[in-house]
Image (cartoon, rainbow, N blue to C red; front, side, top):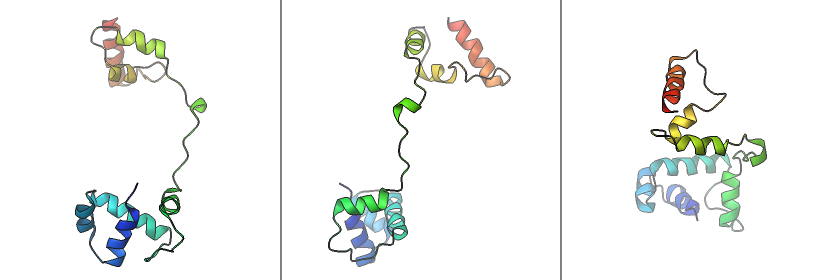
Length: 122
C-alpha cells in the first residue's frame, strides 16, 4: 500500500522537507514531490476528511491516468517470425525489434545497416 497519508502528514502537518520525508519513508524525493503535486492538484488539505480511506485517497490522486488500450487494438507481434529469428546465430531480440517488417526505412543509414546485417545472418 502506498504511504500517501504519511507523506501528507509529514509534509503538511509537520512541515518536513521532501528529502527528510524521503529518507524517513525510504522512497525517492521525486516520489514525494509527485505525491504532493497530485495532492495539491486534487485540492486536498491537511488534515484529511475522516471518511477518506486509503483506497479513496489513492483513487483521487491517481485516477487521471490514461486507461490502457485493450489488447485487441494493439498490433500483436508475429511470434513465429520472432521464434525463427532468435534461432539464427548472433541474433538477439533487440536486433529483431529494430529490423521488424514494415518499420525499416532503407533510405536511412541505420536501417540499411540493419538490413545488411539481417541478410548476413540468414
